[in-house]
Image: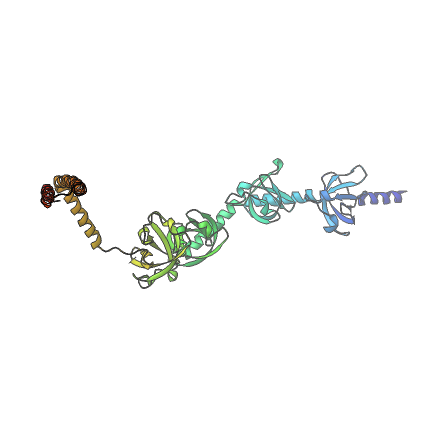
Length: 445
């Protein structure tokens, strides 16, 4: 009897004593996608479900196998079916919280994957423990879309640790700021004016583009993008573009960049290429009320004044030209100091109509003045001549009538009577005398 009691006592002693919240070692004796059975050295086996293995959905057959040994935490000694409910994630979370707490106290940098995108930030898994990083602390710039961080490993520091209030906060922004400051300091120690550097366009604005040159951002002003005129920087660059620039100026922590390399300067040897008299071909780049600017070489615009567009009068350049049109013109003026070139197109065009001499308008003017002077100087004489002319016309008409009457009288005399020669002579003499008197009365015209 004593031997039997001794055996029972030994068996009882061999069985582990477990209670809720205790930590036990277990060996996997079977595994299915949603649960695994562990021998924990207790009179009942322990059950580990997939939901108690991880906070994320998981197929247990892909992460554990029969024979694996796990350290787990007891949730309930009797789960209602006479088995012990186990949890792997809670024990992992406790271990993780311990690690997080130590990192918080020592200001240690942690690196962990983003497992969930929340409304206000990111949820990061640190060995089973969760750290929340608010959106405002994700980057040094505002991040509108946080989805790009999902499943990405990021570095951060823990700034708040209150597990009882379930408040464990991480900060990634301060690391980025510190890294940039260190990179900026190193950059300014090695760069100098005139140095050629590679960069990446970060953003494009109306007045230029900001380029990251490896530790600091430099401004590529719109006036330094090309030797020619740039209307809209966004037509040349976009965020992410790689560019090779040179440092034009360094002012404290501000860097001015340029793309106007001297070996590409179109004004080199300009006095020879653009000397007055040279005929060039170019495209109309833009127009104003007073003329059109013609690009005669990349980066070189010349002015074609409205008066030099055509032989005839032109009110507006747009009446004769359009942007993008290719034209031929002659250089009529070149100012190298001010970088100004003037063109003429009309000198190359054929004459549209005969050119008037300078004498013709003078003759016409003299004749016109003479006529006007004559009219103004003798108006009375002109009126008198007109009146006398009318009188002459009246007398002439009367003379003609008397002559006709005389002829009629002569005919009647010869028909009705046979006149004597003397009478005939007298009649003829009278008629002649009357005609002479009439003629004497008639004034000369």
